[in-house]
Image (cartoon, rainbow over all chains, first blue to last red; front, side, top):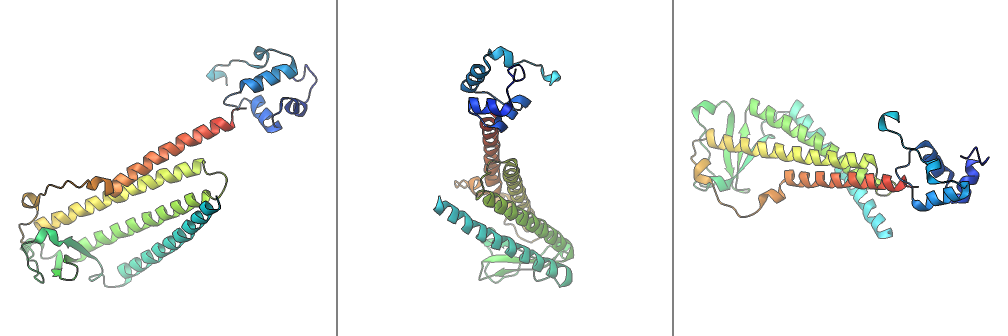
Length: 62
Length: 212
């Protein structure tokens, strides 16, 4: 989604108000949970729906 | 916060001295146990409570079959306890138990020191501290079990080695004081529960940190 929008991680992190380290945690799938406010901010900045950035995977696929 | 830090620093100093004192104590015990005649150092005290029919200053009669094990058993009027001196075999057992207890005591103080020290830093809720508290709980339970077994052993000695009819059914007493709450095993179990709570706290902290 970032590539589609031709946006850099640093720029996205600044716009949604989280640190680059936390954005990296989100991108690598290490996050335990995501706040609705963060999700909303990401969707707003990237102009997309939650389904566009979230994907369900079974445990054996991880 | 400043007062808390001062309290922790005092604890760190106290525990450092306690650890050093225990190490020195163990070195002394090892020295006497290995290089010196241990006859007068390794004795077992039995409370006079169990010997209320015996007068102070008297010597206990040892049964003929145990004459080789027991060297001497006399009542110390100052402490009102029986001091029993053992010959080689039981003495070795007492020595080994004493060393094991001291080693684990030093390790316990060391763990407690590391735990208290970590309170000065920022990362108090960490996996190392959970392991430390859990280990401290196991050590306390273990030391309590050793203490209990030694007491049972001493009771066995009192009941079978001497020409006395004081222990066993005749000395069963009904006590309403909750001794279990003051025992090391009970404290150890409480510490294990605290370790479990600490573990849960750590998971909550990780959840909080990994919620973006």
